[in-house]
Length: 286
Image (cartoon, rainbow, N blue to C red; front, side, top):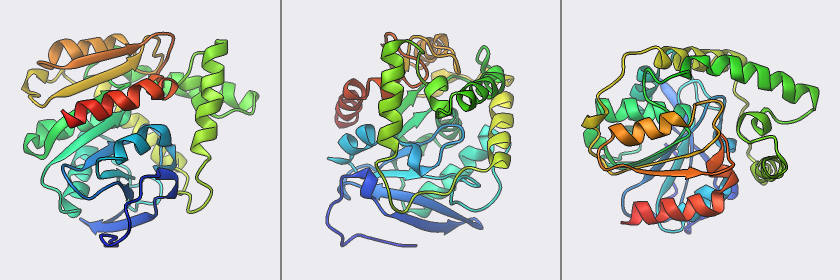
C-alpha cells in the first residue's frame, strides 16, 4: 500500500495522486486528500465513472475538513479484476476496499450506481457507516431503474452525433441553463491534466448495466433498517433514476433529509454544486 501520512495536507482533488491498495486479490486504485483526522468520507461513483469523474467543486470543499477518499471499485478504471454483475457483490468489494485502508467507520457520499452500492453496503455492514449521502439514486425494485440501459444508450448516440460528452445529455436538462451547466461540468472534469485514470472498458460498463437492471427488478428492501443520518439529493427532472425515487427513499429511511434542485436532472448535484457542497459539509460536521 502506498502511504502519504507525512505529506502536507492536500485539498485539491485535481492534484491528489493516485494510490493503490491490494486486498482480496484485487488492486484498488484510489485518491485521497484532506486532513487525516475524524471519520473518513468515501465517495462512491456512478455508472461508467472512474476517478476522474468526480466534480472537484464537490470534493474539494469536503476535503477542507475531512479525509476524503475516492476509489475505483473492482474492474473499474485502474482497479484490477472483473466488475461484478450485481450491486450486492459491488458492495462486498467496497467493504473489502474500506477495510484494506484500515477504516472501521466511514461516511459515504454516493451518486447514482454508487448510491445503490452504498445502500447494499449499509444493509450488510451497518456498523461500518456513520452517515450517508445518497444522490441521484433509488432503492432496490425502484420504478424504471431497470430501464437505465435504454436511456443511457440513446443518449450516448445523441452525444456522438453532436460530438459531446454523453454526461451532457444524461445528467443535465437540454435547456439553456442545463446546457451551460453541462459544459461547465465537463470543463471541471478536465482540470486534472496529469495522472489521469484509465477509461472504463465496454465490458465493465455492460456488467454495471446488468447490475443496475437486477437492482431495479429486485425485491424492495426494508429501508427502515437504515438508522444512519441520511441526506438525499437529486434534481427534479432526473431521466436516469426518476426523481420520485429520491422521494421514495426519503419516505422510507427514518429521519432522512431530502434536497431537490429545481430545473435540474440526474446531475443536479453538479449543476448546483455551489449549493450542494456546503450542504454536505454542514451535514457531515453536525
